Length: 210
Image (cartoon, rainbow, N blue to C red):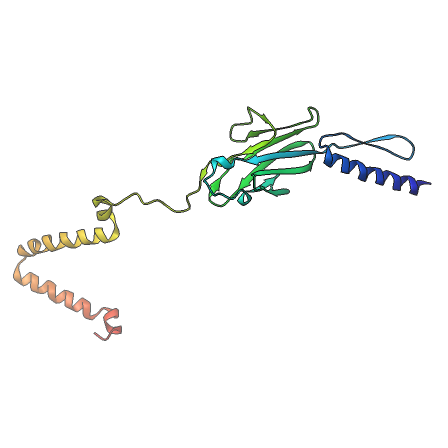
């Protein structure tokens, strides 16, 4: 009957899958009810470690979160910095690591069924050189979330809004008296009257009761 044969095939599949976890990279073969071999895709384990020695003393490795293939698979580093992704199909994957306050390079991980190996390379380097597993994740540099002060200085103070206003007031206080010295007294009185008239007609003064 087909039903018992299907049940036996499923049981064999489960048993082979368990064996694959114990020995990653081993080719899985099933035998159906008719005695024919059925090939199943190989599974591998990507093992790696976070370079804790490159991080400050007291850094907790479990703060490093790892994402494989755009977050399709995730993992957290262990206390010793190690991590792994199990039951991975052959292919090319992008491995990204994140931790608050640190920047990590993107890594390319090649899982090869032909060579039965796992190799990795830095994406920024173009993958020209690849290393065998375990994958090593090392922080590039601490992230600075705050803009650093470039120090003070007279020029910076003068070019600030308050500095420019102070310079303008000083220039006007020095230049205006000299400008008024050459003006006819009658013309000066006329200008003052015009300014007073403009202030009276100012709508803002009317609102303030002036």
